[in-house]
Length: 525
Ligand code: KIV
Ligand code: ZN
Image (cartoon, rainbow, N blue to C red; front, side, top):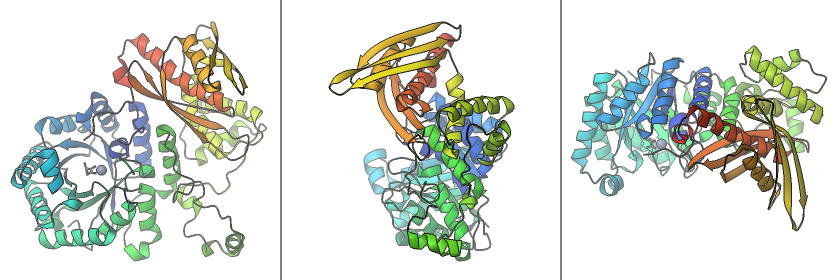
């Protein structure tokens, strides 16, 4: 039995790589997805929804590559109710020992009438056929009636019963547009558990969006009413306002275990490092006051709170920072810190680097320590996230000189060193220092681009904090994202830009097409 009160474990189904990646600006390359999948397996999620293989060849390749790593969690792919989608998912996920096919079709009146133009019976037929087809390929099949929360209850119960009869092993109830409220969702789940025969033979799942800011609350209401799988994403990234945040829902179940009487298998000390990894890769950083992983989540400013904390932490703290993987010490390293101290800190921060990567990061750390007095955890994370790309040629930034003056165009001179030791030096003017420096980079590398987005984030506190820049640029009609970090924000922008230009030049010399490597939005559902 999967839903009864005797089962006290919640399965965590992570969809960062599928629903999360559908968020504007959050698309990832195959190698970035592999890094996230590895982090998710270390976090101990039960299921990774690795993508939507029919959406694009890139999505298919990413799901296949993740499945072939056989990381431990069940690897799942999403399909519409048609043979081509289902076969693509199966081909992509079958490399994993444990794999799942997830099929969905919309069921609400609005979707039936305006999107699908299908009658109620036709939708049930299409779901049943798809589930049966998927079951022929795989024992583990999930079904989702999209927009379930706006579907007539009695019809939803009919659809769910038919899905179970057809062989679905998990039935997921999505609040696709983030419309429901906890009390209403509780009623919906209780209605299903009371009216659908054999519902206790499958795992009942919940999938919430955050349009009204209630994704976590609605997911927890569903759990109280019998759901035993929660679909969620790291940092709550996802379509529009995002999905249910994994770190929040997991810590709610853990911190209030006496209320829920349930547990997850998540290693909560991996929450913060995983959040940082996803933020760094997507360039989408959680706000400072974000629960669990925001910079202020454990900061106590008010005197009265600080006084209470000094008497006993539990006065104002319901979780300990170390429970979610935030280091208590935020130990400061400096230019006299040696390789050993650096390596220990890297391990404590949750990174698993080989000797080559450690050496490369240590060299970057030494360079940074020469520029700024104190090197914080955020700096080390930034170095590690950017070390690989900073050193992958053909071009390396040798120097950058900018001149700005109010009322006059800015001038930039960039000097690059090529892999063959040759130097390229170019100067350019622009409305501001970033525009001038980017123009000079285009001239020096011969790669033309259109800047679509420039995001700046401070890696740590203080005036000498490193700026982390994420740029989104268009090259050859496709969208790419690059990252760079430096105490000088124009230099950070140049490093981000050069990362993309280098990738473009490597791709061109291999003869790959831009579409194979781009991060442009792929087909969504
Ligand atoms: O929000 C939604 O309805 C979905 C389904 C495909 C599960 O993401
Ligand atoms: Zn969704």
